[in-house]
Amino acid sequence: MIVVQWVVSVVFLGLFLWLAVLNGVVAWKIWLKRVAASSWIPLLGGVFGELGLALLPVPNMLHYWIWPLLLDYGCVPGLLHTLVWHLHARRR
Image (cartoon, rainbow, N blue to C red; front, side, top):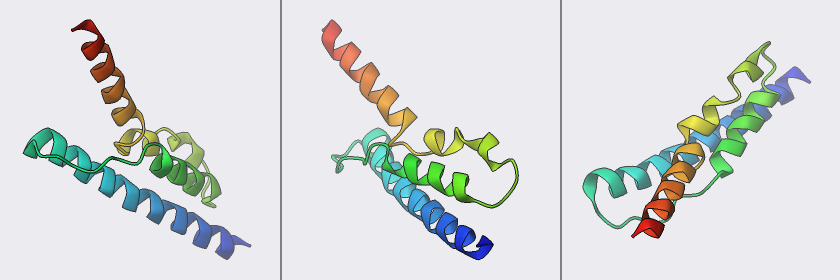
């Protein structure tokens, strides 16, 4: 059973890493290169990271529950950016 938990957890964490990198590339293109970029994928990477941490058979890993949501631009950073953009656009 432990082997299955490790395998499933690593798959979810791998998906999280892949989506976080894709979302990071989109943010990098938009913010630093100032070029048009495809849309980022909201929340999915963070959810995969959360599932990966929850299934990881290591004690106290759930203490790090916030990290996938903060590290993936498609989660908290992207949603905050969208909120600020809409608030700023509304004021104009």
